[in-house]
Image (tube, rainbow, N blue to C red):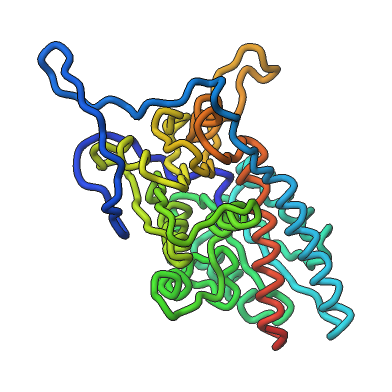
Length: 346
């Protein structure tokens, strides 16, 4: 299911061990120094600013526009070939303004791509059984190839039960246990991959960032972004480590990485001093930071400190304008691919 542009919020500290998919034995040695009798690690020395170029900006808006155009062309070809188009159904429970905004954005994106849009809006006091009935009806509708339940839902509804009721053949969010299980196993292919993690990989690949054989660190272990992003990187032959809220020495681990995906839900946590020079940084976070100079009194920033990171990284996504636009673009792509499978076109 889709949540309004957010990642699972975790508090990073130095308490226990990292969840690690594969450890690298080639971590650069740290330089040690003694200050006032205490032994501590010193961060890797960065090049003077004059000796470095700023990071290449990974333009998520432009790449998302390319993906959406590819979908539009694919949908048009499908219509010309078999006289059918993909259909996406969105279920909204309650009257949250932010959720309504995201649902409207998805409907608009569907219209622009030529995808049929279906929608059911239920009141906040709708019963769980009423929601399940709507999902079951869309499961049985041959004109619907993707079903998305907008999260969060009211507290009295079991989200896991509702998401589990979506047919895995229409699970365009990629959260059904069969799809996540297939993603985790070598030699198995999921029908759908979660939209934001897939968008992260598209950004890397379309920007020419090599993944195979590289060391990657994912900061954050949410089911929505962190874990599936790590699995996707591993599938592309990266050596992957997940840094989370109980990881000691997070900076040292991140500093080894050629690729960093920041998805911890903590504002500007990843600093430039954490990065290996030339690393690619994909910033999934979106946070409101107080800024009196702005009309609304705040500006949007990511989970990486953009100003310091761009001085060290080789490539980096901005916030906004990086990962965000990719999420809806990949949702459209997943829906089109679901329709093609349902009609024997792939």
